[in-house]
Length: 239
Ligand code: FES
Image 1: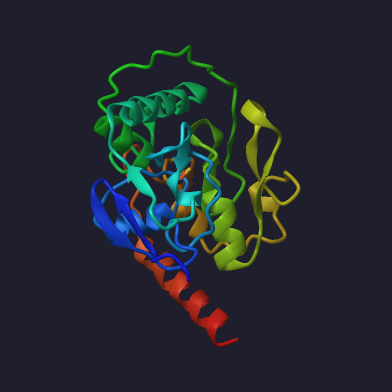
Image 2: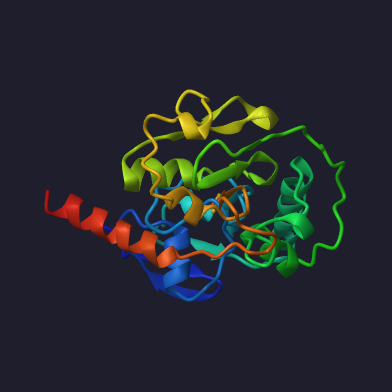
């Protein structure tokens, strides 16, 4: 006999389907868990760790976007410990590259900035790395500013999984990792880029942007991506 598929999230009882993640269950139950690398409709990779939750009986925190729901699980999403971990994660992201909101195209329209505000980050307790990073403006329509990239890889996944081009990838390891186009050629020389702009739409910060956008001028139209995702789902269901 299989156990009933029920779990508790922040004291709310939730039923789930086989294979659902804790994050998906929490969202369905109306419990908000902060995320950065997750985007509905893309595969999950557990890169940012912001979605950490406590699982009763386990000493380890779990990234809810890549943790499958199990019968009888008891999950806590909002504790003092989690709030502190999320704050540290956000501070480390801010310290790792050159996130200067006041001169960023995404100022006022940035998921990293919004989460920093939500977690009351008014200073960073870690040494800024100040890496020397470039901006690639070789593409006729878009630009990539590596100073703002948080390596969430949403651009990589949307390009591969929805557009089917797989122009983007990640090169290098650890702190020297960079998103690249094709074999690290300038974006404008890419043979595979279809210039669809899905990567730009899904970027949570100002790392990818339409050329000509001024400070704070970035406008997003995520509805366009959701439509493309629905189309892709339809295709995979009906061959
Ligand atoms: Fe789960 Fe990033 S949203 S690790």
